[in-house]
Length: 414
Image (cartoon, rainbow, N blue to C red):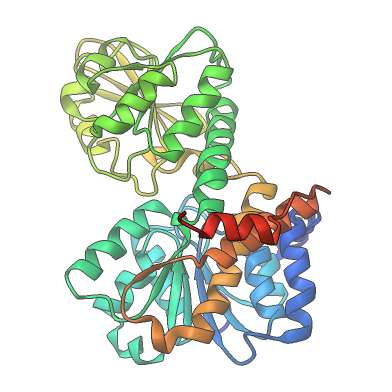
């Protein structure tokens, strides 16, 4: 079946975006040169479900350059860029996605991508893997394994593994050092604020910014908020992370207390209903809410809808909800990923590292799937280190190496 996209005439604009990120992704360019020669994915069917914008498009093209038969879909209805989808389709890849798909359309696009009978799956959030284990079980025998991009997807995979439900190996790319230290922290930290600032056009300095969740994404968001002049409040359920936030210089308190004084709230937990009805009751007039977690379940939009006596679009990607007492609470990007639904996602140089991990981990799965077992596995250390060294090389930086004497000393115990 041919691609299912919004408008093929948008391809020129999409190709410009892809060409721009390619110029700023030296690691993938290096792998492109390598894969063009070695064809590691020759004849292998690959289905990619990651936020469909220019950087993902380049990853998909990399798999095709490496010989793969590639099907591409999005992983969030509001993050697909129609011009990028058109460019990929015009280049001969099978693309099934468009911006603002309904829930039904989104699922249809996932299924169309799976109709390619993948040997390798590249997932972001776990929707592809979930479908394969529930409604598309006839495809399981073809799947060698795959890679998961984000925290939410790894959580779902771990739950499947714990129950003995996972039917093939999945590499937790999100857990690699070169993913969470850079993508989750610096990538999310910058792109979330890109999305917020572009959407609201409001000052950050002087505001009380509440960051819900102090994992690596939360750390990056809080760091950038502090740099923009905000007073940062962190809400956490993990005492170790809460203690870390205190020592990083932030106020820490329960959400019920933060709800009363926050001006801008950002969720980054991977959990559900971390901001809900009881919090909405005490929020300031004009409070702004947004989400940086994968699924739109962290801010309870259902509670907002039920509590509001009036609902009005305040600005593109800002929906205002008027409470019974006249207060307005504003939600960005429908509670979906604000950095992608209201922005362009992580910077190209950051995704260069993450997608290099994806490409090399997919190659690792292809070469080793028969011995990996039906479980979630970490990115091999040699891949993590290779990506870090590639990044340093792209910056023109070299580092020291241990001498044989030093290696012997570190390996000894007396």
